Image (cartoon, rainbow, N blue to C red; front, top):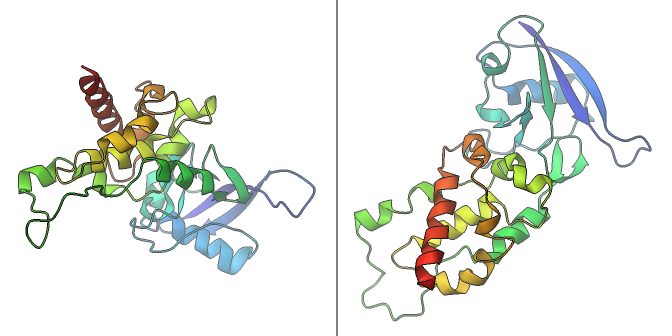
Length: 236
C-alpha cells in the first residue's frame, strides 16, 4: 500500500524556517514506520535527518510525534497509523526541545534535569557481605521505573512544559523515584531539595499525558504522586 509521509523539516543552514515536505512510500501494513523513514533516507531524499539506533524499542532514540502523539518509530507499525491506501501520516519532532535539524532535537537540557535528581545509588554504609542484599519484594517496589529508556516522550507530552520550561519533567522525576524506592538507597535527603521545589514534583498537575505517552507503559504520574506523599510524610 502507498502512504504519504508528511514530515516537518528544518535546516538551520538555510534561511527559511520549518516547512512541511511530503514523500510517498510503498509499504506493507506490518512494516514499521522507521522502515518507511529509512526508505525515504536511502532512496528518495538523503538530506532527511532523524535518529535511530537499536530499532527494537530499547534505546529510545527514534522518539518523535506521529499523528500528534509521541511514539517510537521502531515500535509503530504502518497499520497503527494508516488503515487505507493513500493515508497521510504526519511526523514532527518532539515538543519542548530545540530542533537541531528535521526530526532530531537537542536533548542537552533534558539530561541536565536528569542529572540534578542524582539518578544513582547513594549509600555510604559499609557493605556487610559481598553485596547489598535485597529481597525480591523490595526489588519489585521500583521495578516499574527501571523500564525507563530516557526516550523523552513523556517530556514532550507534558502540558506543564508548555508554559513552565524550568519544570524538571516526568523522566527526571521517574528516575528519582527509581532510587528513592530502592531499599538499598540512602539518598532521599540528597535529592529532596530538587524534588521539593517549585520546579520539582509540585509542578505536576496530574494530567497523565506522560503516562499515556510512555512506550514502556511506566506509571509515571503514580510515581510522581508517591514522591509527593513521601515528601509530605518526611515533613510530619
